[in-house]
Length: 200
Length: 186
Image (tube, rainbow over all chains, first blue to last red; front, side, top):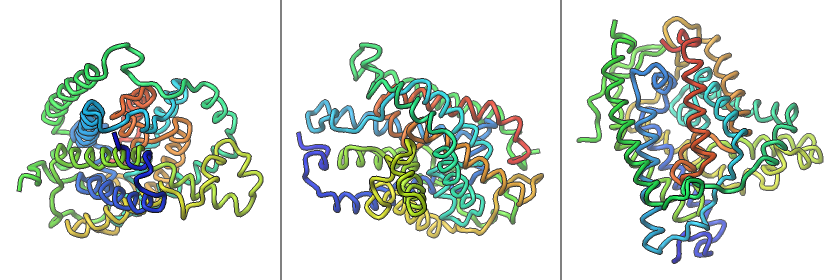
């Protein structure tokens, strides 16, 4: 068991920064290839005629999820050494609603705004400015919220732990769910194709 | 090449046509590629992708220039302040993402200076909404300890309970508001 490499000190901190540049390159590359430099295309997800966001996101989740499970089951990866963001149910529920609102109002999420800015989008650049301003406003005006999120933390928590069922069974359930969502997405795109700009 | 989808062309934007612009990759293939990048991050670094912490690091650094003691004590900033941007892993990740997107767009002939919006909205109104949306998204991402990348994508693949709650919340929030801002996009 020698993975993750960084946790087993097989790569140094400065090598890790180079790895970050490389991973980031791939990250930005695929976001741009998917069409996520375009706010109109991203937001089309919420008008049901272009479900690219859902398709890309869930294919990526399924790919990485199955990969983690295979490497872990093969004894190559120590899953407990992979950082798991702590769960705070209320904070993540409210935070998600706010991020969703910011997404449909601003046209991006943080990662896709960088993608958009790289392709020449002025609205992408302004979104990033708004994002940084928002972080500062939060820090000045709502330090109590941050304390609440930390105080209500349940620590790292996974679905297999909560439901008490084997990891592989949850993996299979998510794969099946993603398949159904993809079928629904294809159906939705046909059903709502009249909403597409230029279709009328 | 099968990587080129047969999907209809992109939505039009407020500035110019998209004629001559090459089509994007098949979404399932792009998602597979993105998933492999995420898996590589897990296997090499023991952490996923993220796009919020880089901004946090830069904001905390700037705040620290003005008010170092306040920044170091602020509950929302102190975590970012420990690590300046030039040694911060997430900043390198986002610099890489910018370059990756730039190279991809350049090779695909998709770089255009524009303010993207629906046909019924002025450019200045769009920029105001982009700024406001960015600010609201930042508060959500900070509260939830991650954004679409750091929570939904990364935590989704890890079967993280909070990440799945977050993911459905994001979709719920955006779908709930979509009707009211439809003139911005269509």
